[in-house]
Length: 292
Image (cartoon, rainbow, N blue to C red; front, side, top):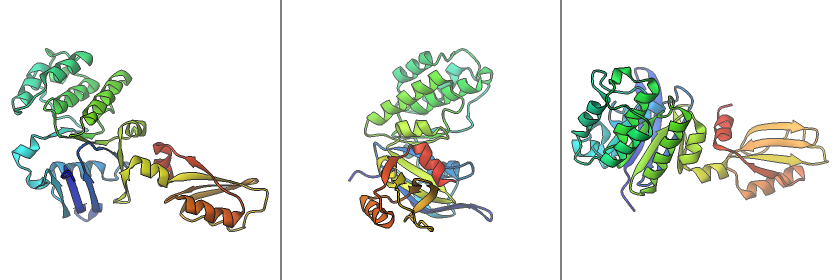
């Protein structure tokens, strides 16, 4: 088995008396595209900062390329690209100088990719960084993260300020990165449709814990919507195993359930006298059902 790029075990983080993350365990393999979802304040940025070594764990550990992330050596840091929510660009520099500055820190730099993205996104190399719009600053931050061809690319809300065309180009670029098979992407975003399009694995943070971490297809198989239609009278207290929500109607009932499998369908059929119809949910629908 290929060594994991990221391994977290029993990872917890508190700020003073406030617990943000509790006992998280997960890993990232080469070729993974991990979509990180959670409500505001769920700890998404904190989790990414723990992986990047920006803050120490309260307990547990997270290792990146085999090293404690809090003590990540320069050789490992050079393999990580990061796009933060708030950019760290140098306002006094021109765009071209900003690119040359970051380029100077890396032995490996994809000049062709950077030049192509600069042209595609119409980034003016002569313009001062401080004069860029929020969207242009975000584009430049993405270019700088992609330039070193990192083995691990970590993105915290990277498209929030991008226009629709730039956002599509960005998503296409991430697909290209993922197609390499030897690189990994961790993407946190409130735009669930982007996560659904890109991610092969999903992490859902809820109530300080990692509610789900696994393959996207397995998540869709696990949480489904059931429709029970029957002419018979349903039990007054309708109990469906692992139901997140149940709604009754004159002709039957609807339920959203977790940990679904065909055996559950047979159990429900025996209970209500009708075989339930199974409806798959989109990732956004799953996320909303988990947070009702």
